[in-house]
Image (cartoon, rainbow, N blue to C red; front, side):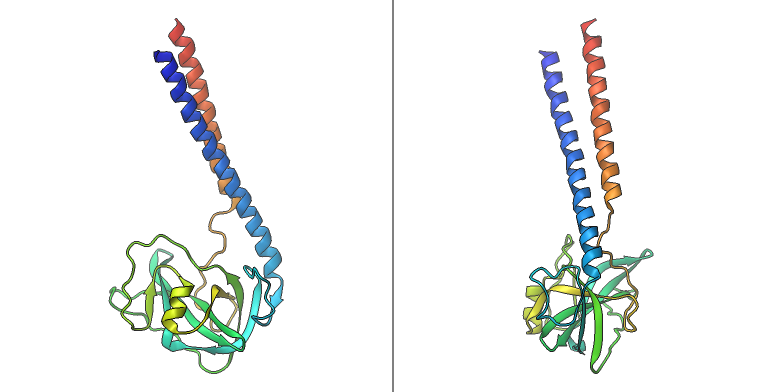
Length: 225
């Protein structure tokens, strides 16, 4: 009975380890597909919202229009070289609609109740960047909407932000190109972890499964003595 219980427990552990390894393999393949799509699509430039394909993610886009500085969005919990800060986003009115543009990172003041000095760029401007999906991170505690701007958020819910701004925002964000004269410090990365790390994690799970198998065989042989 003891041997049967040990065998069942070992099989359950092995199945879990193998599943974790396979999951890491699938994540690595997803990251490879994302990297290929990003490289291919980012080389294709569009010049109007109307010309964009149904799935516009990772394509490059250039638009003429104006920022609305009265409705700034501060994406919270953004670290740069160990220093806390925000990503600064402004709604941008182009000829064919409204988009939210991420200008980049700005340092947070020493005290939480303070707002950093935000840059403003008036008049008609040209913005160029890559279309990216909005952030979807774990929220520590949702910010309470006070009706005042700038608004500090931990996630970019485009429907909610569009409602607060009273404008029809696109369901994605334009990440401004680093070489733009109005760009702030750029910390955004489309792929946080490359596929190589996922493959390395998968190898670790598979090696651990192999080690558990070896130990189980050794124990079963020893228990017969």
